[in-house]
Amino acid sequence: MKIPILIAFSAVLASLAQADDGIERNKTFLDHELYDSAPLVVRTMVTSEGTGSEYLWADAVLHGIMKIPKGVNISPLLKVAYRSEGQGLPIGDVTLYLEPYNPEKPELGWKLIERFDEQSKKFSKGYSHYYSQPTEEQNKPEQTTPRKQSD
Image (cartoon, rainbow, N blue to C red):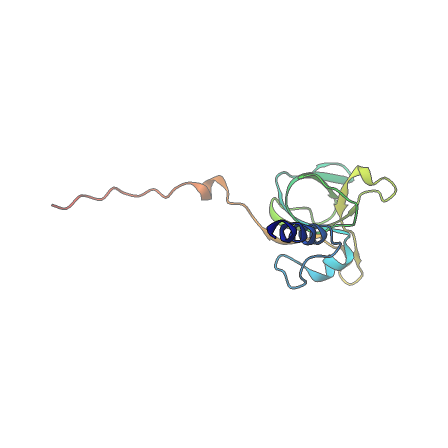
């Protein structure tokens, strides 16, 4: 009796994992407007500043997939492109809204979505819910003065 239930439960979990839009719309760490316009939405830890010229490529470690097109596999270590003249990409925990760097050659990787805002005359930043990582200075333990023991 336990085996059929386990198989059914595994099948449900597998179907949820492959869902194109399986995240609850009220989840934290989401900008719903960016989410709707991006084919790939991931929560990452950006670990390096980008290098390059017109497009900069930054390193990121995947924490979670919030939206992914069917049949797409991504590595837990990502290279993410973004425009050098744009708003940049901060180092730290961040939700990324991505589209193929080159739709005709998807193997080239992913870039931040680019939507031009007519009102501000700027490109969208392509990320949200950024949390910086503590610096080495912030990670140092506080210096305390030893207390005298009382008798």
